[in-house]
Length: 99
Image (cartoon, rainbow, N blue to C red; front, top):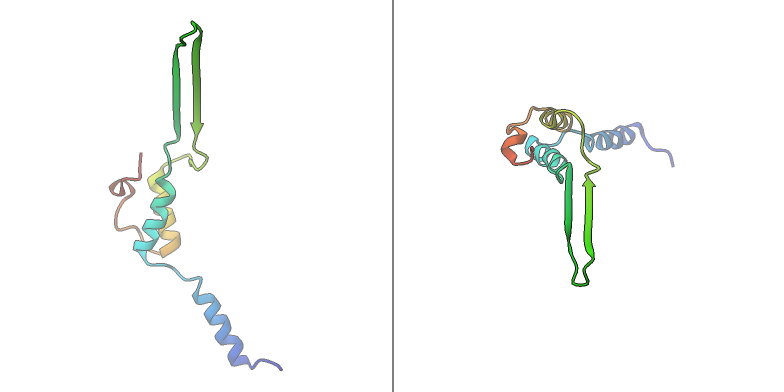
């Protein structure tokens, strides 16, 4: 059974409608979440002496893999514009997500 042209156009329209922009508030939340990740570098260190007279040392450095280089506010603005088609109503630093 062949589909009529009207049905094909209606299905194509529904498929394209799902690709449309999202509300700016939702885009801001999604994009702020992307840039509110862990700090770029965190470290822990310990040093001491054990009860048997030996020394205890430990050092660990973690690098966040999601860190982007450049200005996070510019990347946030670009992300919001890409997702919603509008500029953000609140800058990244007011959301508590910027370093």
